[in-house]
Image (cartoon, rainbow, N blue to C red; front, side, top):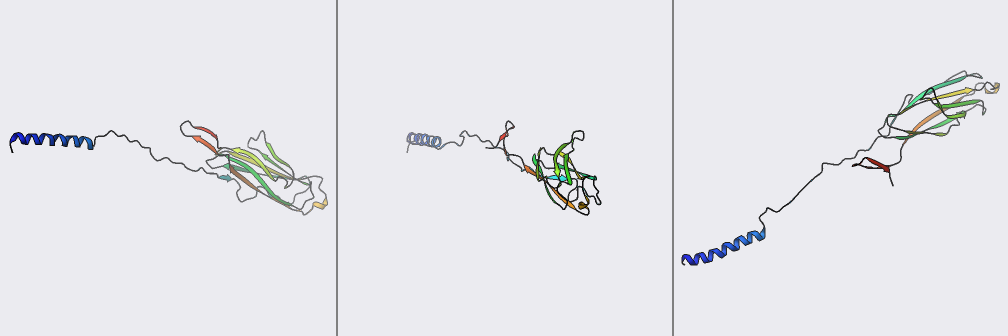
Length: 186
C-alpha cells in the first residue's frame, strides 16, 4: 500500500476516533455537591426537687385549742423544660369538721404571701400553682390550727395529710430553627 493510501485510511480513522471520544464524554462534565452536618434533637427533662422529699412538712403532738403548727417546703423545677405545677393533698381526719383548719401559702415572696388554700384540714384537693421556668423555685408554708372553739370531744383525735407536687409539660410548640420563632403546635 502506498503512503498516500495509508494516509487516506488513517485520517478518517483518526477523525472517527476523536468524534467517538467526544460522543462518549471526556469525564470532565460539570457537577456540584453540598452537604450538611448531622442535625440533632434532644428531648428536654421534666424533673423537680423537694426540700423535704419523703418527709413530713410538719408534725405536732399534744395540740390544744388555739394552737397552730406550720412547716415549709421548697419545690424547684430542676428540669430543662418549663412546667405546669400543681399540688394534690390527700388527708384523713378524726376531728369534727371545722375545728381543724389548714392554710397553704406560697411564701416565695415573704412580704407578699399568696394563699393557695384556706379552709378545713384536708380540703385542698388539687390546686394549680402556675407555669414555672427551668430552675424556678417556690416555697410553700402549710399551717394547721386547732380552733380555740374546739371542745373536749376533740381530745386525743388525730389527722394526717400528704402532699404530691406535680409537674407536667407545658403545651407543645413548633420552633423555626432559622429565626428562633416559637409558635403553638397545631
